[in-house]
Each structure stands twice: as C-alpha cells, then as structure tokens.
View 1: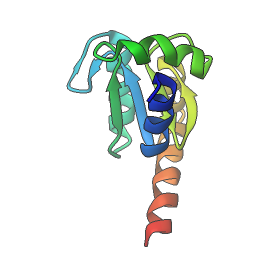
View 2: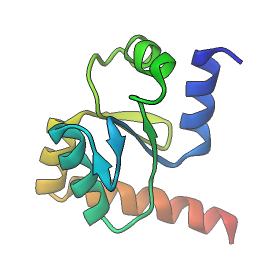
View 3: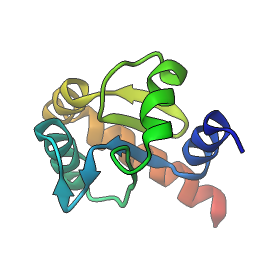
View 4: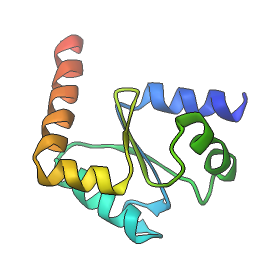
Length: 111
C-alpha cells in the first residue's frame, strides 16, 4: 500500500480525523494542543495520527491535501483546515455544529 493509499484509507475510515504532532494527551506542539482542546470540547470521539511517528504521512499529506502545515482536521472526508481555522470555527460555534451534524448523519444511517 502506498502512502497516499494509506492516507486515503485513514480519511475514509475515520469520520473525524486529526493529523497532529504527538498524541491528544501528549501533544508535541502548541498548535496541535490547541486543536485537540477545541475538538475535544465538542464532545465527540475523534481519531488521530501522530505524524512524528509516521514520517511518510508527514511528508506526503501536505501535497495530497494541498495544505502545508499541521495539525490538519478532516471531517467526513473533507479537509477543514489547520489550527487557526479550527479555533476560529470553535469560537463561532461552527465546529460544534459541523461535528454534531456529521456524527448525527451517520448515527441515523446506521439505525
């Protein structure tokens, strides 16, 4: 499996996915820490990939996503953005709305 195929599979298999530096409980950069705080405050579980442990993804994802920095938040297969966008959306209440609507959409389709 190529790195791009791995990235595509991760994005497809995880409704809410954060590519970050470190782990949610132990972020290794301030931007990743802020992103985790905002996403966690929305109250839904999310998947993550530590790009410091996955150097192939760290090098290929920026080209794939056309987004040069980390963290990167993906919801329902769409790139939402990095730390500044995540924080701005959270402060405006839009991140919570998007996450709740997305999770509810999939909960309804499985019942």
